[in-house]
Image 1 (cartoon, rainbow, N blue to C red):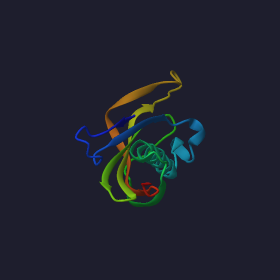
Image 2 (cartoon, rainbow, N blue to C red; image 1 turned 90 degrees about the vertical axis):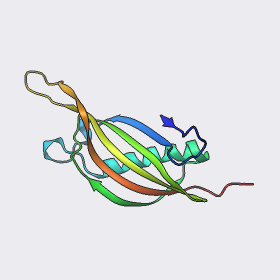
Image 3 (cartoon, helix red, strand yellow; image 1 turned 45 degrees about the vertical axis):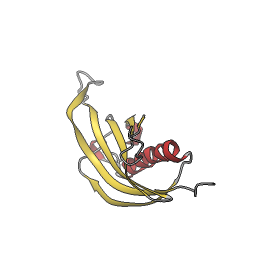
Image 4 (cartoon, one colour; image 1 turned 180 degrees about the vertical axis):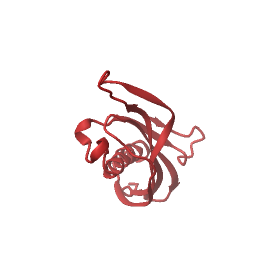
Length: 137
């Protein structure tokens, strides 16, 4: 889902994905998922952002200021956002965030139990730069 700025200025455009984290992605004790999982999700929303803005998937050039603030676990429902914060001729700088909006809470009595987190938990943040091909004239 994308939300473009109605004023026509592309800075401020937001793309949002939601994703369930399957138990097959658990990598560590306590059903923890590795940090690379969030970075992969950032790549997905950045790709959609480039498609929406430029009609091209773009290529990731760099991440900066990656912060792992809270765990991501198998059974989580994640909301991943990309916000365009700066636009160059070919570069697109985006702020990213992973929010845990739901979490599985299995017990022996109710193995499929889960809850909506209110407020959501900020799990991972980053800033990234993506490049797109030059505009053809």
